[in-house]
Length: 277
Image (tube, rainbow, N blue to C red; front, side, top):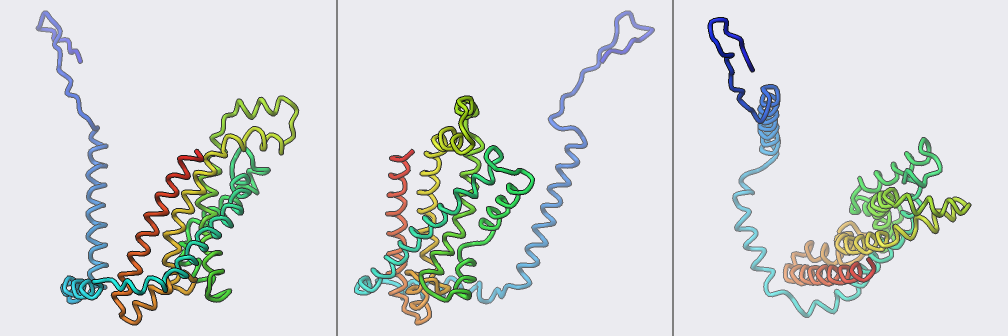
């Protein structure tokens, strides 16, 4: 900035001080931090009102007592876990298969470049995806057990309904990110709409489709292990019965089996994704 001084022969220059944030930005930042602190204090008061700190103080000794009862794990209980473990794998596999089959058309209806109607069909497809992703698989299983009864079918349907949103969301985003030039090349040949999708879009999204499906299968194996807690079959039912009878050595054995299953499924899914993508 330059100011002319009538008594001086040379103009006067004032140095400009640079600031990272404007005064309004600094004020907004401090207001945000103040609001965050107020929210933390309010949440702490809500939590403190419903917490019995006597039990919290006793929690370490209770955890140590249960841990001592878990060891050593009851290894002779392993043969009884083979059938429930197989049921868990079937729940995850069949549920993933059903979810993928249902998610593919939903994804094409939700993608902006393949939906037949952006005003009617696409919002409905997006609503299906959001609904599926908003409800946890355990809640789906709880509802389905009340509707169709306990057993493997409730678990399979619960996993399928949960998988629709996950697979559908990632797949429709992959469809929207396809290369337009390849689609235009197929369109220039006079291909129909179904042929454009088959030759212009499907080859581009097929690697992503396989990767998403395998990844979801890996997630579903983990979720299937706990569906038995609400009666949806699998190894979770053995876990629930062992906890109810305070058979902590059996609980430790079940937890080891679940951990081993998850580790193996993670390794298998990683190899499959590497081979397919």
